[in-house]
Amino acid sequence: MEKSYGIEAARAQLGDIVDHARTTGQTIALTRHGRTVAVIGPAEAVKPSGGVEVTLYYPHDQSTCVLPALPRTGDSFLQEVELGPESSTETRWSVTEVQWHMSSDGTTYIGVSLDPADDHTVQIMGRQRQERIAAARAAEK
Image (tube, rainbow, N blue to C red; front, side, top):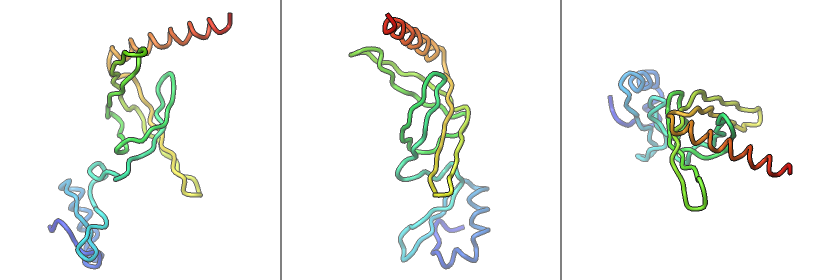
């Protein structure tokens, strides 16, 4: 099968192109006037060009960021955590769930649930939790 097809030529063969991409893992370019305008490939092989805005749900917190691609359950990633003014460490997180919602106005929301992926991250989380409790108690006094 070819690596690229003109859009008009691809219309008649779309089912075959999709099946080929799914079974082989290859991506196939769709072109217009010789320039690639879209790609057909397995979902995990095609990455968005501008990144994906997601909300990360940690066991203790949440934050919004832009990731280079939509993560899948089981993926893991490193995150740098500041421990003080001149100290930081890396924590490792495992993706446990990916949820998405599209509203009727076209707004898309993606939530990614995370769990610590190693003992070091569990220890850092515990230390940060103790610091937050101590800070809250100090603020009460």
